[in-house]
Image (cartoon, rainbow, N blue to C red; front, side, top):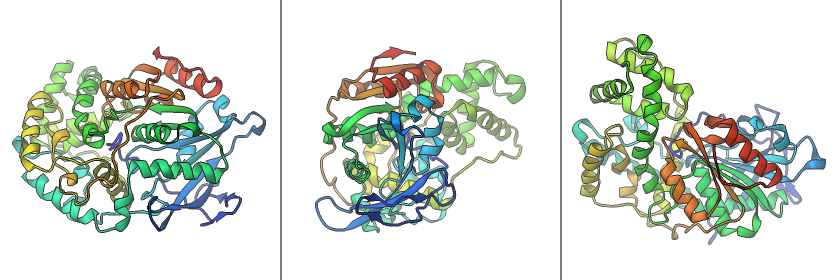
Length: 451
């Protein structure tokens, strides 16, 4: 779930105009950064009932309207990440030939940021980012996790909007954005959890898609979805950790973590037994090579008993909002196991098979105590002739093996990138992969390729 579970530090953008005009959104410069325009539209709270909620949307129009193909919607990951500033933070990285052909459009999904938000209102240690993932206690003990999961489930179901936070509703919201923009079809670039949203949209509205890029996908198995995505973290960590271990071994004189990858791995495993936060921080550090130095310094300081470097975390309100939407989406999309013993046994097995993650991917979460059944069955993703996938070979959050399951469901061409980290296209991939996706967005060239 956090390709899904990554906590992205994005600043909110507020529209100066809260309503949608009859002929489309009422755009105005975004508060705080006028390089984008912002607006607000209304969508149904419940697509089978009553009520309305707001969605915050943003755009940067192409500077060359004569070459404009349409809209490129940027679907954020999470669940729970903001996408309102994505036209600036991600879209403006793209090459000029893409920017000349598309208006870049971002949005905060329902429940997130400047859209009608939700929060679980967690307090105390339950609200600490270290508990974003359910790391077991010493020896694999999950007693504290059980109590926390039950508290979180109770706290997160107080807001009536929570019941309506689902992937299928986000896909429906995207179609409302398409209508508000006056577009017959949408092109979009979904990253991480956004790939699943994009695959669900193309399944629900196949005649309304143009060119679709799915970047860093996970297994769309409708029997498991988010439950399976969390389980896959164990595989992703094993795929990716050798990159960090090799990097740290080359800098043994600086960090003292070991002069071979095997020695670095052993240092990590020993340290993690006595410094539990090391596990949580290391998993986040695997998302990009740029975070390797901070993680290595954290491990060095923890091992030496020196003051620990500061690990960046989101502001409390943003963290609470992200976590709330993450929990709501995962629990509403599919039924999770209810038996505590099921999780305890799975954690014990996982600790042996995947020691880097120590049972976390199989541990109990709030979804075990969620009081609602799924509102509707999860989507069985259907093949689409409009999709191009791109996937790094060593992704900690959405492992390559799981991405192959998405390719199988979509029967889509896949650009396989020999790189590590989460997010490929103009992120943690390489020039070859970037060029392949750009050619698709600009010219419609859709081919499988090893990069």
